[in-house]
Length: 301
Ligand SMILES: Nc1ncnc2c1ncn2[C@@H]1O[C@H](COP(=O)(O)OP(=O)(O)OP(=O)(O)O)[C@@H](O)[C@H]1O
Ligand SMILES: [Mg+2]
Image (cartoon, rainbow, N blue to C red; front, side):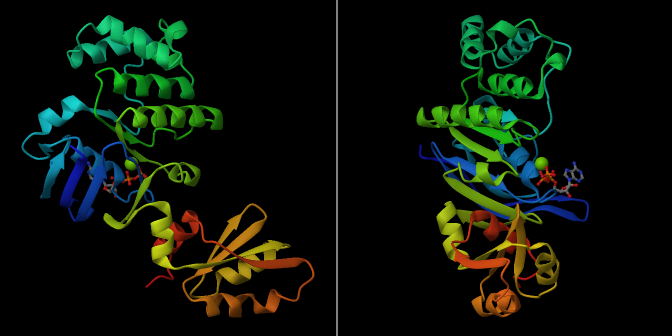
C-alpha cells in the first residue's frame, strides 16, 4: 500500500467557524509530510480527523487503508499520535508511562519493546524519573517514544518541536529520517521553516483551506515569485517599504527580502534606495518562507 493517507473534501465546522474547509490530501508511504499554516488555520483539527479522534462533518477517504469515518478504531491502533501539548501522565515515571501505553495498545512482550525504545531514545538511565520533572527536550523524547511503542505505520506529530532547543530538534529530525528509511510515514506540523525544508512534501493551510501542496521546489516555482535581498542600513527602508502595496517585505536578521510576482513593483519600490551607499540590493532565489508569506499576505489577491 503506497497511499497512506488519501482524503478528499475533509470539512469540520465548529458552530459558525469553518475550521477545516474541503481539504484533499494525499500522503505516500515513507513521506515526511510537513503540514504548515498560521495559528488557528486548522492543522490540529485536520490531524484529529485523520486519526479518528474527530468525525468530519463531510468528506471521505482512507488512512492506512481504513475508512476515516467508519473504521476509526482500526486507524487508532496503527497510528502514533503526538498531540500538540504534553499528554502523558505527569505523575508517572518514564517507564510507567511507557508501560501504560504498551498495555493500552496490547503490545506483546512489552517489557522487551519498552527496553528497546528507551535504548533508542537514551531514556534508559532516566526510566525512574517522574515525567513532570523531565526537561522539555526529554519530555518530547518520552512522548515520541510512547508514540512508537506499538510500532505504528503512521506518525501524526503536532508541533513536536515547539519550545525545544536546536540540538534536540536536530536529534528529533535524525530519528524521523531513520524511521522514514524503515518505511514509516510521518505527517508533522511545524512553524519552523528550517524544519519545513527537511520534509520531502509540504502542505500549507490557511483559514481551513489547503492553499498549496507539493515539494518545496514545486511550491516555490508554482508561485513564480521574484525576490530581492536588501542589506545594509535597512531599518528606515523596512518601514517605508512595508507601506508599498503589492510587495511583501520580510526581515531576515539585518537584511530584508522583498517579494512579489510583479517584478516591476519591486524595482519601482526599491529605485529610491538603489543609489544609496549604505544599501546593497541583489536579486535572489525565493525561499519557501517568502512563498508562504506571500500566500497569506494581503498582496496576493
Ligand atoms: N473543539 C473546538 N471547539 C471550537 N472551536 C475549535 C475547537 N477546536 C478548534 N477550534 C477552532 O478551530 C480553528 C482551527 O483550530 P486548530 O487548533 O485546528 O488550528 P491550528 O492550525 O492547529 O492552530 P495552532 O497553530 O495554533 O495550533 C481555530 O479557530 C480554533 O479556535
Ligand atoms: Mg494546532
